[in-house]
Image (cartoon, rainbow, N blue to C red; front, side, top):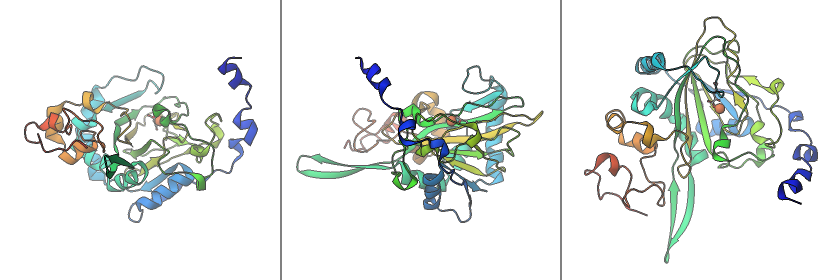
Length: 323
Ligand SMILES: O=C(O)CCC(=O)C(=O)O
Ligand SMILES: [Fe+2]
């Protein structure tokens, strides 16, 4: 019997363990930015897979991002594939376009703090008789603005974590282990987002499901937000954009994902960004966050040194250590 025939005869996990869709749905927690801590957001994500933080981004920041990016949005083609509805316009490669986007959304302190808790990784390694501990810090996975117009159909429910070939395994929130999700998403509402204009919907708790359990629309929760509110999400949670049933409302979302620095970035930061623009718009710290840095102990080198040398040669040359 072939391997695939043998596997096909195995009992489906849904049958073996009962149906994930009958499990109680955890609450979507809604925190206030004035009091939310990274630890509280992480706890909420472990419990539900998603968490809202109200008033995270100031209106000035949203306005500055819109000033930087609206011309690109206006010039963007509508989406032609099947992943997004055709009423979708997108702006990507935000690092070469907007300091405000990178500093305000990606660089948001709460977001970065919770990413450090969930995506940082340490490994012990021997070099001869010396034992070292290397820490790899999170890097940007993708940056995007989504503008979804009236009439857009709902996006199919999906898991973003499948891009890194990482699916959840069935467990309880208590059994969840920090590190098992390869990315963390931030979706910032730039214009009032309602169920009617296509708010992101997700299935709370589906990051704890068996990956073979099919998504069920009746279990979704719509994440309605006011401008400046943020929705943080684990990528192993089933989610998608929804139908925009309005006649004249644009749903505008400023989004980013962070990932572990030893995984491939979804949006190729080295090729999508013009390096001269990057150097002009982004700080050295932000360039490191974008992946122009070593992931310790020694991943991503260029000519045995830190990849920042590719941008700043000769100033940074020789400053780096390989290991
Ligand atoms: O449109 C949304 O709210 C979600 C988009 C999304 O899930 C994605 O781009 O992967
Ligand atoms: Fe997604």
